[in-house]
Length: 134
Image (cartoon, rainbow, N blue to C red; front, side):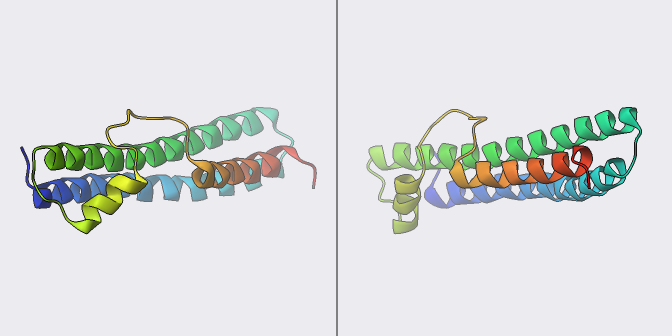
């Protein structure tokens, strides 16, 4: 079994890997908003459909990253629970993480409320820029 410090290190390694992907998708989010602005000014229906598809992919991938962060936290908090059940004393930070997470929960595509509002706001900004008349 891992020690607590190894579990914290494992969690931060996972978060670091996820942050690299987030930076790439944040850049592509910016690209999608620029493309939406350009497509919204155009009468080209193929362009509008293609940019809409691109925007949907970007939002879906950001949603997947939000789910991955939650999954990492839930997995590590589940490992903290297992460590504690073996009689190992864990820190107050680990206990707090267990309290706010869902230890051992499976990967979930549904974001929490705050993340869901953020993702929907991005989607509304993209789609309305493409399809609503100015």
